[in-house]
Length: 400
Ligand SMILES: *Cc1c(COP(=O)(O)O)cnc(C)c1O
Image 1 (cartoon, rainbow, N blue to C red):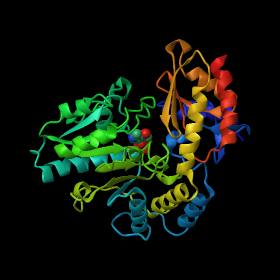
Image 2: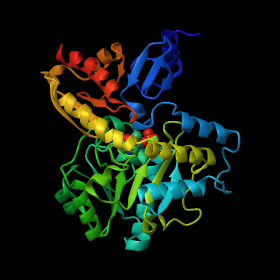
Image 3: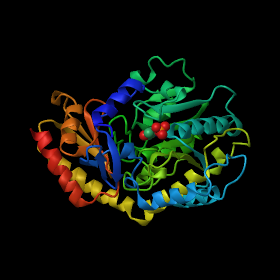
Image 4: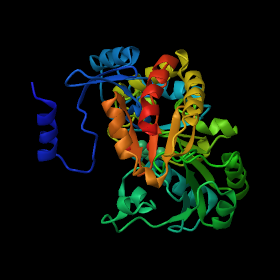
């Protein structure tokens, strides 16, 4: 058996250094818990950036995956498989959608939506070829492909990776007037996160998405919500856009769509936009494969049947109000929705990283986002006693 230190050294020696993880080497997970190779137990307060909303190694999802693995894993879309149609139907019923495009990673879902919106713009809206514009927000995070980082406002995500795909305009987040002002006859879509996760859990003003919906409808542009992080129960609703009572024209989900077992993402859409795709327009070897579809079907079922979405709302309120009661000179603001919570520190606190390292020592795994925000996003199965225990660890770290 290798020691934790040896395993870390192997990563340093052979791995690309595009991440700087906490030095905790995990080899087992169950529900909200993970264990490192030395047997130390932690609560996971990150949930793989909300990809394990259902908790680690959920037994029903694991069983479905094992069963499907012995039957059929991949046919490619050259042939049909017996899981895909059922996956579409169940996903549409749960999200009130009418059409689905299955992909794998979140970034692929974003890229697919960009292609669909552009094609819709040219073929349905009549935008002159080559001129389509998509409006995006400052501090957005939509993934890491060249096109997507090309419209990031984060210097590090872009630097050294150009030239970039043209056709994007950037406006401030949470500002409907800015959206209205940026629209031109060539605008085909507005792409937005209901809450900006990677930017530091930035919650827009109340009613923002309702205003966005109104403007997009009036101006005939496709509203695209990136719910890859906010979706699937994380904020206490199946989709975060439900808090505003709106439906986007395209909604992107990924991450927890498989409960963290396998990369599965999807573009949910009305027929008008995705309906412009013709056979051969777009594709993916693994997108819609029977293993991913079988896993996602059960991952969705357990979210609903085991009450995880309601639990996220209830436990999220409890965690957020309890964090708000901590009397600490370091805390600037606590914000979020459901179990997607950001705790912003004053710059004088010296950065969030050292607090995350102190919490790791106490058995709580979380990650700083940008320099001054700690994200608290445990699996949606967390119960009050575990939150109370976590608070007993968080409070001393923030008050010492
Ligand atoms: C994680 C994330 C993505 C990218 O998903 P990948 O699976 O890492 O490609 C896109 N948008 C949002 C909002 C995300 O949180």
